[in-house]
Image (tube, rainbow, N blue to C red; front, side, top):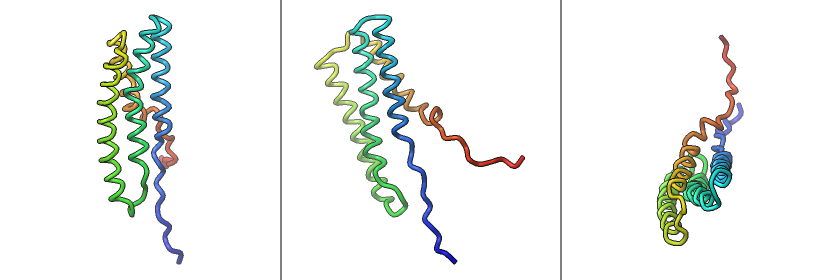
Amino acid sequence: MQPAAPAKLPRPRIAGLILLQCGVVMGLVLIGWGFWDRGTAFSALTGGLVAAMPNAFFAWRAFRYQGAAQARYIVKSFYHAEAGKFGLTAALFTLVFVAVPPSNPAFFFGAYVVTLLAHWLGPWLLRRPSHIQSRG
């Protein structure tokens, strides 16, 4: 009898979610530049980056550990990642409004919200096809 091999869970597809967010940001920048002006495109860029950068930081910090033996470190890394994401979001909002106030605040906040929505809908959009065959 062979010893049981430990189960390997597939890692979450974080890179795909981050690329999806960056694609959404670039799409919003092109829409802003194509229909309005450069200032609107820059507002969309900053709004999208304020949403995407903290999410990338969270993914980098939260998914460093894997496996049941690392459970304590997994939980700690999620707490640290969430605190860092919150702090980074607050710092980026402050930086944007102090250093480079958006010329179109509606487009800034719109890009921020749409980028967050892309992150929330990302797992549904990037889901893996099921490998389980039905016997019906």
